[in-house]
Image 1 (cartoon, rainbow, N blue to C red):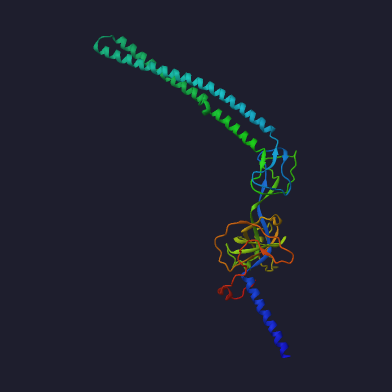
Image 2 (image 1 turned 120 degrees about the vertical axis):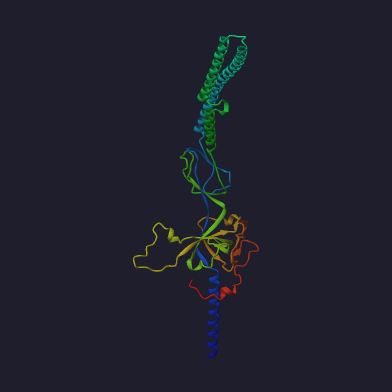
Length: 376
């Protein structure tokens, strides 16, 4: 009888110790399966409207940056380019006539200034002779009148030149009408380039319903491009776990659709509000019928690795399980690197996709172990 009691007691003690170690581990390695894989998604929209001539991609097709997505009929834009070119030619021709008018006005001004200079010399000479008594006063007065007339002609020529410049503006490429026509032509050429829509980044085409012959508008969202270069997880942790989670701490990720795959990541940021804080109708607790519910806060976990094996293609919205190692103090986030994950065999344990990755079960620090129990 005593032997049975000893065995039962030993089993109970072992179970208690095991439960204590499990509780300590779960406290230092908080985990949640309320987590979903996310990537940058770009809404593909045309920058000009028109009829779709050709669709170069299919649903779920992978594309690289610069690949053609679809083409819009460029016939109307080509006509607009031709019209803008004709307006530029007309402006250049008008600028040539303007240049001739201004040149004539400048020539008349130069002649008037030459006449003024000659009249000034004649007047100075007549004044000198008059003082010597060699010429009569009438000769000096005539020279004065000719000088005044020459000065008036210069002012008239200057006014005529200014009027020509104000009316016609500058000549050649400096003419305002020419510059406006050139800008309009450049804009039409830019619009012509918009008729061929290319992928802004590498990724997968999703939600594609576009068909040839469809008429689209400027800025209309047509389909989505899911980028493949940057992935993260929005993991909703309980508020009782947030006091130990810090940006930079390592995290392990399991994806439900790939049971044999484990990825590594790091905590990038912690949400400023719970999920209910940003809901359309936040809960009202002023009625008196209040039940305290542990809130969850979104924690962004950035993947340090992206599988390159097509068998492990990441898909946005996939369910994941995230475990954060809070024994690490955090720090600088490692750079994201592609990795090839091996396909798990039947009955084999899940393996990490990164060679040489550290074990998730790090030694527990004495300070953390000495901490009194906390409600999970």
